[in-house]
Amino acid sequence: FIQRELTEAIPKKWAAAAAIAITSILFVLIHVSFTFNMNYLFVAFLASILYGVVYHKTRSIESAIICHYVVNLLHFFLF
Figure 1 (tube, helix red, strand yellow):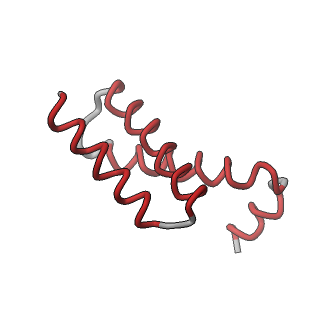
Figure 2: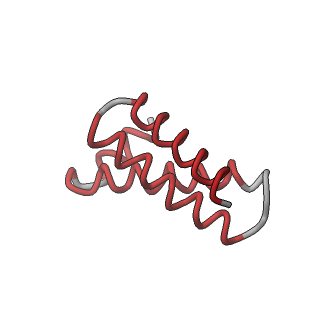
């Protein structure tokens, strides 16, 4: 019910951006359980936006999962 109301309240051209922003905030809230480091949470927010854009462009959850995996690998090996 709430999702339908929000979807109808948001103009079509902003629906994808709003969905990505909301899920990115939720993603960060999940990652707060790992750390309270604001730099880490900011990077997690940006990464989540990337995952959302990848999903939006490909319409494939697998692509977003692979992107998340690659970002985690880069983080592991470079930092």
